[in-house]
Amino acid sequence: MAVYIIGHKNPDVDSVCSAIIYSYIKNQMGFKNIKPARAGEINEETELILKRFNFRKPALLKDLSGKEVILVDHNEASQAQNGIKKAKILEVIDHHRIGDMETGEPVLFINRPFGATASVLAMEAEKNNVHLTEKIKGLILGAVLSDTSILRSTATTKYDRRLVKHFSKELGINYEKFGMEIFKAKTKSITGTTKKVMESDYKKIKLKKKVIGISQVKTTEPCVILARKKELLKYMERKTRSDKLNIMIAMVSDIEKNRAILIVPNSDILEIQRAFNKKVENNELILEGVLSRKHQLVPILKKVFG
Ligand SMILES: [Mn+2]
Image (cartoon, rainbow, N blue to C red; front, side):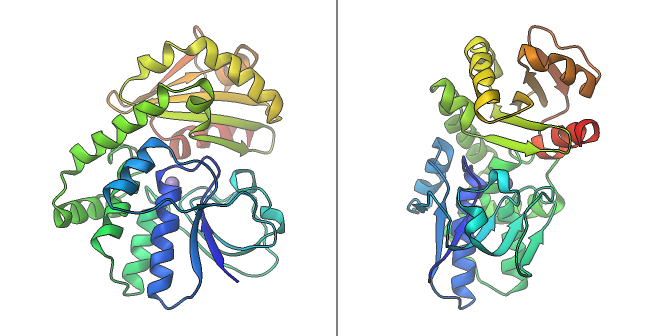
């Protein structure tokens, strides 16, 4: 039986690349029949990176029921592909907070607070003496640059920096330039439909007191998003109902100015003001120095609603 390596729903660069990277590592370690998979459509930046290093898209898996899986880049049931409760989880490799996942048997669980799952995998390769090809190094580079907003995010660790500097030098790639290319491709997704803007990096976070939906858009052009605030707010209200959320916010991370602008629907203004101790004006709240959902935004929400 095949073992599928799969990232979270609404897959980002790190989720898709990590599935491919880890499949490669497992194969090199002698494991058979390991297959990379993805839990949804590929976004523009992922497409750019796969093309650049000449990889095909992993197969789309719509349901994990009855399958043996290795999860990368997530460990919470709410972010996993459908059918996860009926799947057999063999391993989890991640870099997020520990969530609510339950397994029937002991599993290998590697979680490091690195900037990307791809960095965790690079360390695993190092530990297991697995040689990485240039193509695989390219994927790691792309995933780390994307997840750390070109090393600007506070989630960035020394290890991430070392990897990016090493690999970019080896591959002869200017990582600042490559990173900007990646973020330009990302900008394409913010000029698409409302659904695309809101769903391409959406996560549902289950805290003790509240279930919070957060759509993140990392961009160098936040004004493009803010100009569409009205339609986004409408979408968020619908999403609150369809996804059974208590709170829904959109986090627009401005990677040049190093700050986030939260877009907050009317119904959530009071709770968000309370959580951040700051006034929401015109459905917007600015958080200076905040770029990371995982490292900066979620911990604050957890303090108040966790
Ligand atoms: Mn990630």
